[in-house]
Length: 244
Image (cartoon, rainbow, N blue to C red; front, side, top):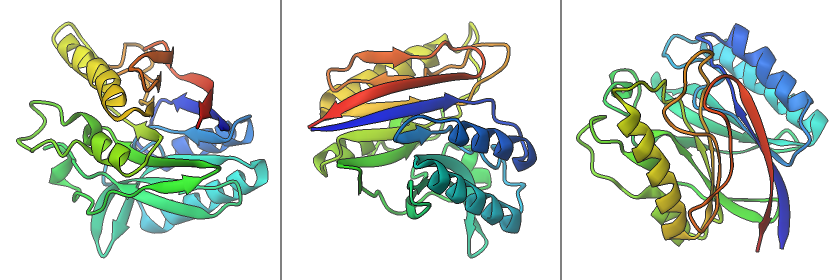
């Protein structure tokens, strides 16, 4: 039995690293957990306007903070390779080492105007657990966000032995018009956890003055919320998972 403490940071994501990086470092420095999870593109901001050199320097600072505070961090960021932009989650261990990355496999129609889909679904082992990472629409394949087939990535990860999925999102707000999206996101998180008999730790980007349209928290293998953040503003949750 592995016991791990998870912290999720429902963080307000600004357009630039100069605002986001100090907050990320502060949350890592103040953490009391094994894993800390941040929203989609929480470092660079949700855009394609970032410097490769400054982003790589920020990654080094995050890796150092993880090593100094013995925490594994899952960071949302933009990344480039051979001039191509990806939406990425980077996993830095408590030793400050890069365990691996996940590139968003099902970008929305809007994302695809400036980024390319990733090419590989990966499974990681660390601290006695097996897990995968998904980014926002990877999990939901939300109707209206693009005419893409649903690859059921949560199911694929479950079939490959994942016990936990760390899901980073940046969905925006919710209004009377799109409460249907909230219901869809909520039901998908619960049903996909139930189908694949695994935990889903989901962390969305916050908005300061209105509710977001997908919750942050932890869903159990029974499809039940174990903890869920308030939908408005910057929030932090922690939960102890017992994983066989």
